[in-house]
Image (cartoon, rainbow, N blue to C red):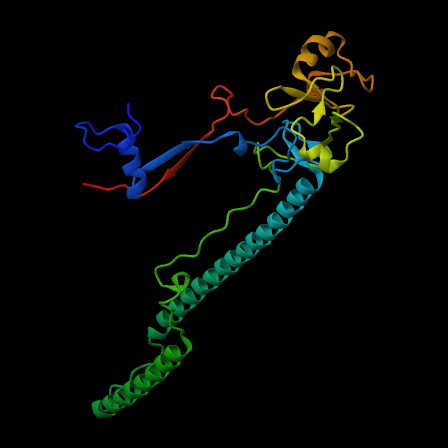
Amino acid sequence: MTRHGKNCTAGAVYTYHEKRKDTAASGYGTQSIRLGKDAIKDFDCCCLSLQPCQNPVVTPDGYLYEKQAILEYILHQKTEIAKKMKLYEKQKQAMKNDSKLESKSEEREKVEKFKTRENSIVSKPINPFTSGQNRGSDKGSSSSSAGAAAASSSSVASSSQSLPSFWIPSLTPEAKPALIKKPSKTVLCPMSGQPIKMNELITVRFNPIDPSLNRVALINRQDRYVCAVTKDVLGNSIPCAVLRPSGCVVTQECVEKLIRMDMMDPVSGDKLSDKDIIPLQRGGTGFAASGVDLKAKEARPVMQV
């Protein structure tokens, strides 16, 4: 292939490179690209701030957070839940008041129906000697007074009734009020979606590769921490685990070959159980077989025939 073979347009075959180039230039179709290692979070970075942790804590599911970031997140979620609960209680009280008004209106309708039925019953004897003209005049006067009363009542009703707004979508006659569901009071982890509590957070203690380095110099290094037992360098390509009693970070190989032999914390000397060994969730390594989905897709408009 020559130097300009990819840009050659004299071929009889519509190549994959030409198709991809035209798709990118047209603005239609779905584009996918594989992300590099720079788009992956390091194993010692917070899942919220994506920065190296200064006071790291880990959840029982193995997700690492900065202590200040996760506490602010939990407090923010609690305030949001309290606001939603107040709105739900307000809606519940409004529905209760509406039901009371409906029941009162039904009772009033029953009373009015009963009155009309009772008034239609003739209780006085009719005088057969009265003239029909007087009765006709009485009926005319009564009908005119009833018409005036109905006109006045209709004017009052029309003035008191407020017309709905046709410009606001929530106030149109066809729009129904959106019902608020009862919010859950449990705060969920932003990564795993499981319930999270402040007292379940475990303090993590990383062993720096050189204790004499300050924080800035430690962050600038690519290899920052080592295993608390074997002194192996930790990274995204090495599975790690956190020991609950001491909070130290060790490699998974150290757990399988040394710690599980006697199930004892090598730093604090406490007895361990399976729940006390928390596998630390890590990012990918940038390789295809790292187990992390590194593909990013962008859905754009599609031309229809």
